[in-house]
View 1: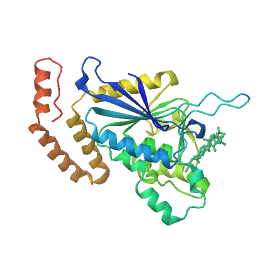
View 2: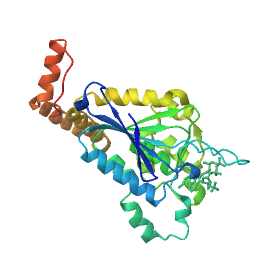
View 3: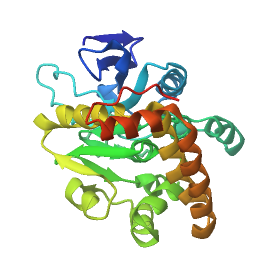
Length: 282
Ligand code: COA
């Protein structure tokens, strides 16, 4: 499927999950398109990501959303090529001269929460730098796929700052207290292999493989019942906010509720009849 340029910020691409069945829904790819600044999140990109997140929530045909960074432009003659980047952070130039009240207001309604609050599955497709707000954007997604040349870090400490897009919390949930503090206190960058070794990213692949592998996973996920996916995501999120005994009780409730859905009958019958399930999403 072809792409469509949404302003100059996000490239939106819709890919059918099943080429033969329009009703099977779509995978959407949003590409942050500011490669000359390593896709740094300035105010207009932040607004575009928030808009993209609303679109994913409201468009029933979208089953899975992928967030990516645009590759570098061809360099001007005599100039060096810019490096590949997912997102190299919040736009540092927009921090200059800002005071706490203003920044508190700006960050109160931010793109990291907008992505985090998407109830559908989300994947970060990372090729290059995922730093600061870029690492945080990747962590706002459910799954992270990255190339072997990607680099990760929370270098805000070098600016006299700390992560402000949920990084202190989501990183700690994802990789644990010790590794989280090491990254946040040192500001060091780590490569994809190290990020993979302690669970910051789900998969590593070559740059040639990244797109196909990410779309393949998105299509696999998107081929399930949209209702069950939403419940599965919300059930796993309970683990982040509840003590385990309470979480297990809540899981029992939502698991049981699924027995009143049409899709549970569809799924069970399809298995027993050795057929492919055709979900209704309810
Ligand atoms: N905000 C604003 N601009 C940024 C940026 C950011 N977070 N990250 C990179 N850029 C810009 C650079 O200023 C440069 O712009 P210019 O070409 O107009 O001078 C352009 O992107 C290319 O970056 P450059 O630094 O020249 O590339 P490099 O290969 O030498 O270094 C990095 C790459 C990622 C190591 C370096 O850009 C960097 O450290 N970026 C900031 C990372 C950071 O601290 N992020 C957290 C922010 S809260």
